[in-house]
Length: 65
Image (cartoon, rainbow, N blue to C red; front, side, top):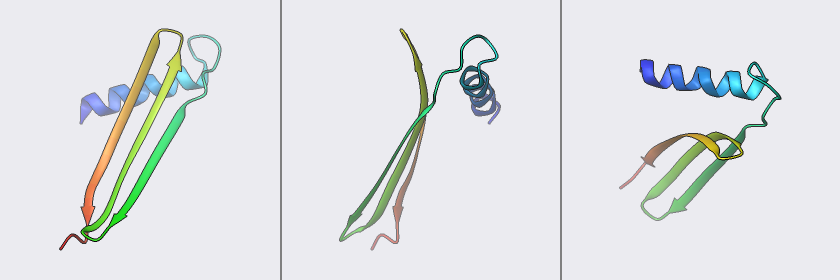
């Protein structure tokens, strides 16, 4: 949990411009509906030249039967 919080702090500081010019963060969300249930995932990241930091999460399957 501490690693996630530290990485989130780095992403926040880079996005707000504390270390230079602000970098706009990106966010991608995907939701899929199948006969087995609903799937979802979210990815948040920042990209600046050769450096890229991405955090992703997937909620798996909701109401799978």
